[in-house]
Length: 281
Image 1 (cartoon, rainbow, N blue to C red):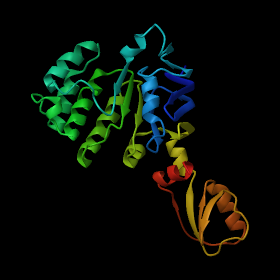
Image 2: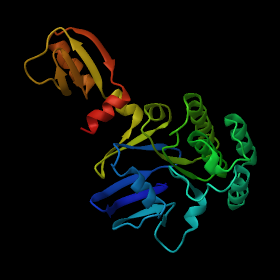
Image 3: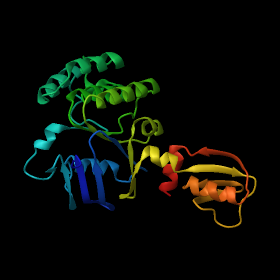
Image 4: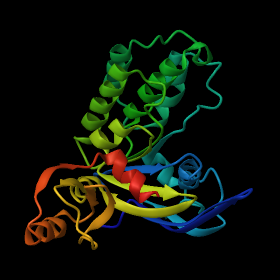
């Protein structure tokens, strides 16, 4: 089955910043997180996905349709929530719902009402008068009920308090369950990555570092405390500090340690954010 989102050699130059070439495929039934430092090109890539900026080269196809082609039928199957909503400030939540809901054949009014109650969102206040956290909650309440095949979220948990972040994660997991859907999100929140993402696409200085399956990535790195540190390199060794060693191939490292009769005082898996930091060095 073809990927739902296909990015091939996508490039975009903005002032002194060069994005790409970026290559990435997004499959149905997955949540993919774009991860990188500020200015790595995540938001620019999302704009290219939505054809909100023109590519300087390469191609992007969504559900088989080129996003910059004459056929824009793909737009009916995708929801995009940017970091900041433009043009919403003068409208109340009720007015925004009445404008948006008729545009989507699968609009789920019960889900909308559920999210409104869950987050206690006032629908009679103008969007511009709401706090940043409440604006984010209302934006999510107007995104998930569209029930499109693809959902693109730019920093969806920004401005949310801790209880609301957990509630959002539960909502998104439930949203994914009934049928094949795909989610692409950007985030700087480690909890979002640990609890939501199936895949991580790491970006740095406009370039794609790599696409990683999250669970496999976490299992591939381990930290060891040894009774003594070998003089030579250890198979899988990524770094060492005193008697502490970090490995990106635990099986090879442990076989070597056993063969050298070195005792392991302690070992533990690396935190996901530590692994990402190592990969982005």
